[in-house]
Image 1: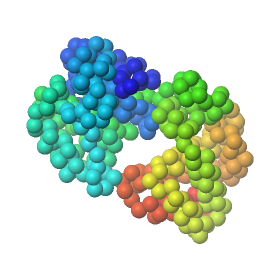
Image 2: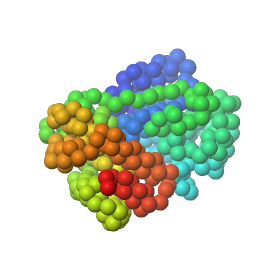
Image 3: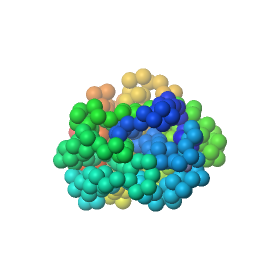
Image 4: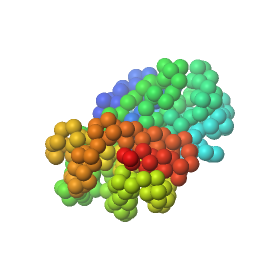
Length: 328
Ligand SMILES: [Zn+2]
């Protein structure tokens, strides 16, 4: 079910969208932002379905032809804009999939809805091209830009959009969901609720992933080996990580680990550490490193995350990151 009722949390945002729909005051462009797995796509889908529903009454009906074609993935007036050449959305992607289409009236339903996932990967040229459409959008067009943060856009784009920032759910909410809807036991639910930091989609994905545990182990080994070793170790580890190329969860492991190291380093409070199963390594690094050095490692992970998003060379990005983990 891709209706508002299926969205977990984000009550305030859903309330705003429902009120806009009820009063016929929806906007032509929205930025829906928040970290991976927080529910941007779920909210965008529910909103698109509601916009097009022929029997809308506080939520999309799920029964009309519009809802049914939406659910089948073949709605003639809802479009998903995706990168075709690289991982970034280029100017040709925006022109061919959005601007040209937006100039032709909708086929059958009330609006023509464009959902742009990872819109923060739009190149400067792509943003410039989109800006022209946002300045004078055809009356039937609704554009939903999904991004980790609205900061990635030109201020001129942001000012023409309604900004919906999705906030993380509480660990308790995610935990309840995992127990109630995913049949998780309490211990498992606790770990993934904390680990996902309120991003419910991420919690479900990781919990159900067959190889997450193994991946986590490999990444952590690489961190410890690179920390203790030198350039050779970093290069060897970068090779090991090749197996997870294209998998963003891999760097999340590193990010979460250093988060815990930093927390323990500054507070010495074990109860604030999320990954209690890694206490030995967390203690080891937090004794060895100053807070500044741990923060530098967090930055190195973030930099690598950005580089992989913008299609940088994987092995090189990993080598650079792992070398920065080394203290010699
Ligand atoms: Zn419907």
